[in-house]
Image 1 (cartoon, rainbow, N blue to C red):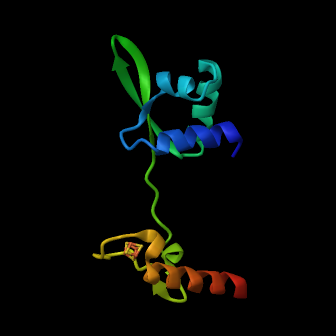
Image 2 (cartoon, rainbow, N blue to C red; image 1 turned 135 degrees about the vertical axis):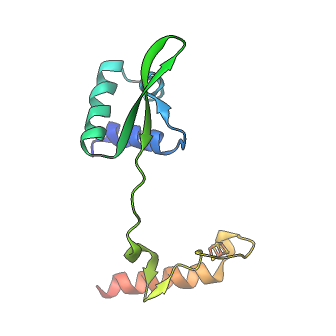
Length: 113
Ligand code: SF4
């Protein structure tokens, strides 16, 4: 994915309620025509959805990232599910031994492949 499309997708993805196309091009510091081309690419790749939207009498679009199903294989290392699922501990990621062990397992698995 070209850099500008990647940037656009990240901006859209970072906003759970979406971003207006009329704001996206300003955020990306590109002109509106280029923004339209970038949005079309993301739509063609089915990464985002576009909803008609009217703001202050002006027609624009609300852009939202599509939710994708998570590949369950990405949550496994050595047959163990990532410990964060259903974890009820007070989370300090940097100090979590369970997560560190899981990540080591993942690294070992990738090294062996
Ligand atoms: S990083 Fe550790 S404490 Fe935090 S959610 Fe995951 S398993 Fe739980």
